[in-house]
Image 1 (cartoon, rainbow, N blue to C red):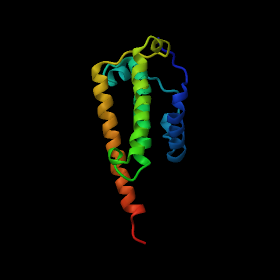
Image 2 (image 1 turned 180 degrees about the vertical axis):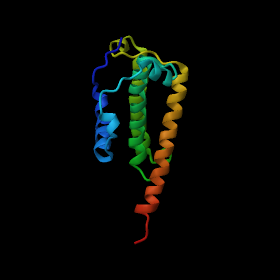
Image 3 (image 1 turned 30 degrees about the vertical axis):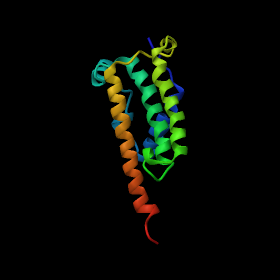
Length: 152
């Protein structure tokens, strides 16, 4: 059974949540006392994924999206219409993503608390990553139109 310890890849998520709670405040009833979480309900909410699959997905999805977003935001052009230098860097990034996706397939993954994801998970991963990149590209265009390309 995977441990529920603090993981290093939790740091960015916790930092964002901490900053959000400082800026937005917290409802009084949320801090009135400890909350009891219904683990079975959360598991059902995650489509019956289970803790190990959730942890596996939580490892694979951020690496996939974050590595690709770095290349999306570093160029003015759409990510797949950039020059050869971006293409070469993207090939390197795809290797990192391939390792992240392949890791749960090896026996060492059990030590990390990972499981082999089902094919349906990979459909989700491709869809979520594609949607995320599309949103980044749309926001990049909006940003360029409203700030960078605005006449002075």
